[in-house]
Image (cartoon, rainbow, N blue to C red; front, side, top):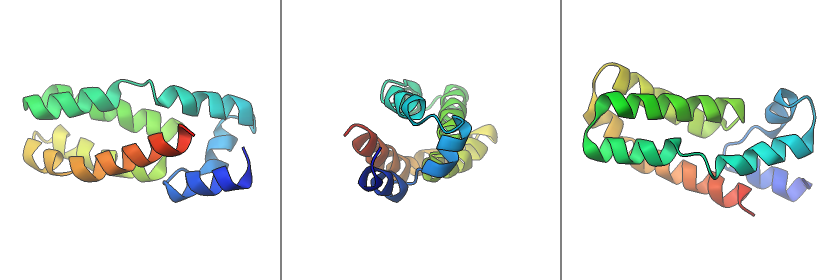
Length: 116
C-alpha cells in the first residue's frame, strides 16, 4: 500500500494506522480483509430491510455492518452506522432510513477506494 493509496483511504474515512495496528502491522492481511469488505452482505441487507420497513432486521444488519467497519477502522462509516443503530434499537425506523443517503455515500466511497 503506497502513500497515495493510504491518503485516499484516509480521505474516505479509514484510519489506516489504526487498522494496521489491529492486524499487528501485517499490511497484506489488512488489505486482504479490506478486499473482503466488498463482498460483505451486511450493507445490502441493511438497504433491503430499511426498504422493507423491517426495523428488527435492519437493526441486525446495521449492527453487523458497524462491527465490520469497526474491525477494519472505517471510522467515518462506523460512526454513521452507530448513530443509525441507536435509532433502530429504539424502534425509530424513519430517522434511521433518513440516514441512508449519507451512509450510502460513505459506503460507496470506501468501496471505490479499496476496490482500486
